[in-house]
Figure 1 (cartoon, rainbow, N blue to C red):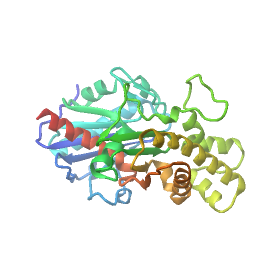
Figure 2: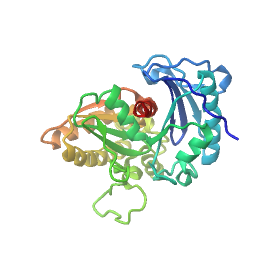
Figure 3: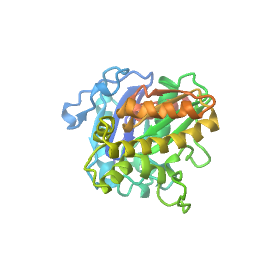
Length: 328
C-alpha cells in the first residue's frame, strides 16, 4: 500500500532521472525554493556551485549503482520523495524528467538504466507517490523549458538547446514553446548517421556512440591510448598529444556537422549548450562555435546553460507548476 501525497497549496516536487543519478527538489508554486532539513534522509546534497544563479535549496541526489535495475531505482526514489513531501507538508503536483521518449506503456530510447524502457513510468509514479497531477517529459526538453522560462533562451525566438553528454540531443524552442514533434522525439539527433558509409538500419545511436561522452571514451579505450575520462582526454588534447587531439576534434567536428544542419533548419537566434561535456569549456565551445561561424551564413550566438547540471530538474519543477496553472 502506497502513501498518499497530502494537499498543500502551491508546492511542487521535481524529479530528474538520469543515467547515473536521480535528483529531487521541492519548490513553492511561485518558484521559490522550499527549505527542508535533509539530515535524516541519508542523501547527499547537490553542491550549490552547480547552479550559481539559484538560491540555496533542498535538492537531493541519489546515486544509481552500476547495473541497478529500474525497479530498485524507483523504489529508492519513492522513499526519498515521500519523505520530502511529508516534511514539506504535501505537494500539489509532481514534474518528472527522464531520458527517452515517454509513451503510455513504456519509455523508448532509454538504454542507460536496466529495464527503464520496459516501465510504464507515469503509472508507476502515480502508484508510488499517490499524486493526482504528475507530468513526465524527456530530460532534454525539460532542460530547454528551464532555459526558455528562466535562463538563456528567455525571449529568444527561435532558440536551440543542445545537450552534449553521454546522450546527444537538441530541443528547438519556437515562440517560447519547446518543440516536441509527432512522437515526442523532435531533436533526437543522437540517432543521426555518421560517416560517408552509414548504417541505415536504424539500430543504435550512431552520433551518440561516436561523439557522446561514453561512446567517445569507448573508442579511445579501444585505441589503447590509456585515457579514462573526458577531462583527461581534453587535457591531453590541449597539451598537444596528437592522438588525443585527433579523437577530440573528430568528435567536435561530427557534432558541428549535425548542429550545422539543425541551425540551418530553424535559423536560431541563440544556441545554448548543456550537458556534461560542456565542462570541457573553451576546448569544446571554441572549436564548435568557430565551425558554426565559418560554415553558416547567419551564425547564432553560442552560450552555456544558465543552470548547468540542474537544468532538467528545474524544468521538471516548471512542468509541475504549469500543471497547477492549467488545473486552475
